[in-house]
Image: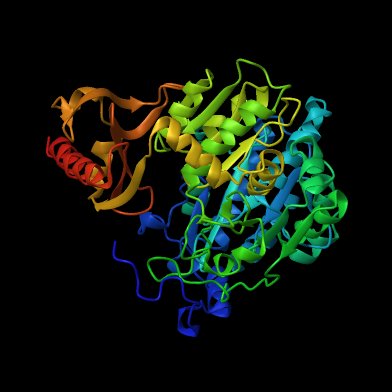
Length: 549
């Protein structure tokens, strides 16, 4: 994809979403899923997402989804509070109101941020887990986060976190989506719904101090004393997201030198630089979207940014700038493996199949066990909940890890602790994460990583998603012998929804997009950029031959 000429520049006014029109569309546009299947509820790796302007995220969608969740939790015997959070997207505020009205009508106790504020995804996960640690079977909690993550301002999203605190597995989300679509097909027949005034006055709506609950517990997962003692200067760009009001309490409680460089909350996200394609996207792993922070990186020892729901992290080092997410994951794993004395010796470290093979080499070099899973943080929930998985990370700059004593902290991605971990690494080792990554490169080689999108028809996406290794013919890739062909993840044998082919010097993975008529190719070489180009050419040819039958 060609880089947009305005990428990295502040968004012009004509790029900003018309918020009144967007919110009006949320209430006025009604999905007709029988005539327009693209308007159905569909849970991807991070819940249901869409835009009211396209009639893919509207009041009826949220009412149907929340009714389905209320029915699911009743059938599952979940009788405790539901922890409800929202981010700063314009549609999140509207969907939050709908959710409260439907959930309360169904007799669900709903815990919301005291004062009506915003709540990050990891804070919801942490709240569910700490509640359930002391709850009996009649008081188990779960949660909903209303967010489309880093998506553009016109988008909305909703995801369900089950009683183990993390993203619900496909059995649950599949049932919820099917039931929600049944409700939509029947014009919301069966939805319990009360007026906003009645919901607001209901004793079932409980204010909860998410900020104090989360902040006061951070010392159990991060070495705050080391950061404070070293005097690490931390710059934070909340990027207009839901964690904005967490940083000051963190600084005050733990005596940290934190400067919040942007305190704006604006549903148009008009302060954001444009991403590589010329759209506004709060992607903290993008050097274009992170230009505001990169411009002032020299003022801080470590700078961090997060997406609107704070399940992602962007790490900026003073000397070198924004870290590649894969590189930071490799450094974080090695640091945690060597600086968490109370963790079990046989603890696992998780990566997705499309994350860098540098992680494989680092984990093997440490003599630890790697767990490679399909894309989606839900695959880490069980292991982290049980304390068997010390760290789980995704190549898209999302990760979480256990407390210092080896017990569960969150079972969803936590951009706050990954940001603070970068400061801890600098404080304890005297080196920033990029410097430590270069030491890994000296030991294990330098990887060259790339991701591209290739046009693909829906029928071809279905073929790619259902492949078996036997469908691949040929024994070499970019001049090297193929060593492994995967359509199931080695860490848990779950289908990857695509294909991964490996050699001694590189690999590629191909998987269909859940929202667009493309398939994504991930490529990595430990040889050179030119070798990546060879991988790309052979990967496209191999996938084309498979799709052609």
